[in-house]
Amino acid sequence: MKFNFSNLFKINVEKESLDNDEQVDSLGFTKTELEEYDKNVNFYYTNIVNSLILYTYNVEQLYEMAPILIDPLTELYEELDYAFLPVLFETVFRNKLINENYKEELLNFKVEVDQIPVELWDWEILDTNEVWYKIRIDAENLLDKLNIKTRIFNTDFTTIIFKK
Image (tube, rainbow, N blue to C red):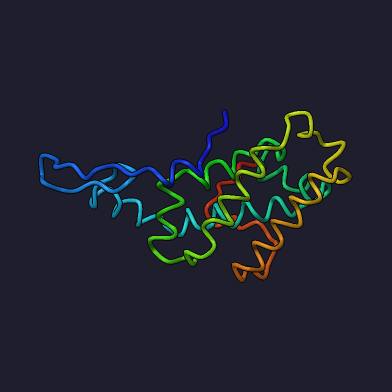
């Protein structure tokens, strides 16, 4: 399932009083709830960076990720989808792990990936298709702008289960 995330960030919800008189933000979360998300901000930041890193990989590099991601092609999309869940995405910016100036570019990248036709999600064309080439370049450029020097998938928050 695909979502139009660019519209979710423009929602204006009127602040409502709750039982404990806490106000809600534009996504409907209370200050207390947002503080709980803040505790995992490094994980959410890593998800954004990791998802961009995966989009810089060619087929061979994605195949090498199989022990970590199980199905790299599926994970390619799902990692990005999770990283852009509005409350998680916003938490990274609220905590200033990524400069607010890059929010729109990141959202545009998500939209660009969402617009990839289903028939292009195929191992056989990932290295040769012009759409995938542009995605790879855009991911590289975003990582450069975010001052991410490495293109190594960060497994700090990953549990790897080895087959016997």
